[in-house]
Image (tube, rainbow, N blue to C red; front, side, top):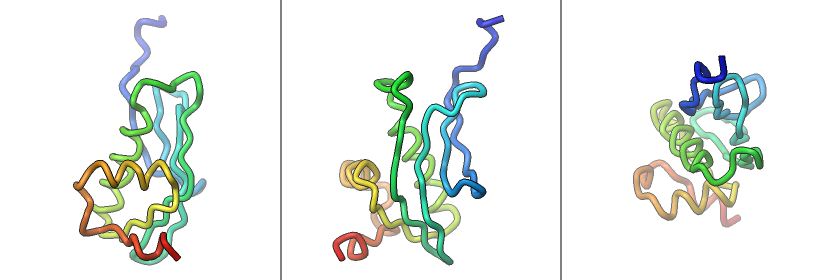
Length: 104
């Protein structure tokens, strides 16, 4: 029954695809692609499916992905413009971001 579908966004790290995914039920509603290096994660691209835009899923995705990277004690490198803009509006991860790598 359609009313039984869980619509709570869930963010998971998919290492096989090098991305964090945000799901609504069984549907991938968006992802944040990354390149992983020892002690460092470079966010390269963020996408939210047009069917799910305007619901704040991009912000939820990025917040949870950055929190996971921080928990893993990885330095965050925001090559993705969306991730970079999000970080500039939120100071939660200030000590773990390598801005110098982005400006090269």
